[in-house]
Length: 406
Image 1 (cartoon, rainbow, N blue to C red):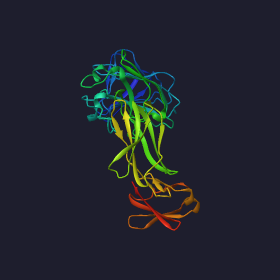
Image 2: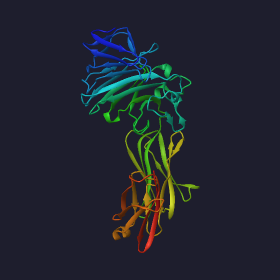
Image 3: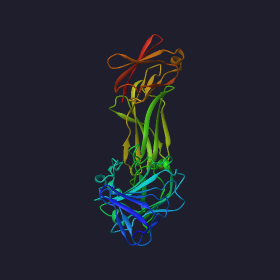
Image 4: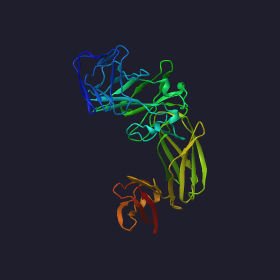
């Protein structure tokens, strides 16, 4: 099974293989189990060669192959995964990465069709816009995790091989509609990046032309494009500007998104639709959207975003609050806030440079600052979570606005 290969088995802790030549798997099976690790220290793409019917069995998130790929050598790498039912190789090439890194690979089939009961480490959900999306996800996850890189490589022509058995009923997947998606462990989202996938239903493969190093995290799966893991809404905010309220939002990716709606309310009880805006439909890049309310309510009012997909399903954003002081156009944004709060005032107020004071719930001053601009950031990162008030005097009239620190 191996040629010129030195292996040390230390189950269940580590399986350490160091190259003295090149290895060939010719009809043999290497079963990586019980948390073992197969380490390939040779960066050559031919350090593992599958020349017959042999394969590597991983079939668990903790049974791994760690390959010192570095920046790649221009060739095609093959991780020859498989099991007793199917040969499931993973192909890729690497470029533009530093030479100091390794990539961890593993793959496993979920025990039943319900992927949400068998999530990989660090993945918190497989929810779509309608809830648990397990029936639209193939019963397999792949790990492709770069480690130790000063510059992560770009992976090109990543080709996943899947099994017919793993999208069959009770899944409700159309094979020709499968696409790749990967989990962002920082944003805890599947949908911030959806690369273009090309499926070959004859060869049971899905290929991605290129994934930059900045988009490489840990886990991948295959999803029916009719029910993708959802639009990634990075933020939604509302702010006062020139006697209007401007709502803005940013999407990291979209799949089958029909349009957006802005709704507003005076009392948080009855909301009314303000405007509708067409969505991109499908996107894998950051997109900015904006809708302006030309005649907002005076005092406190509330805005929220409704995202509607092609199939009619929808999701709501968090509610954004604005406060407009009648005649002076004063507001705080966003509310609640975390690190920074923004105070929006009229040019008349800003020109007078009044001093503003931030009070905590006990009435103590925790910060003071000069109002010098019509749209001014306020650093509140040092404040504890709770309720606060911003107070200042303009033309002998006191103005007080409240906000919540998360």
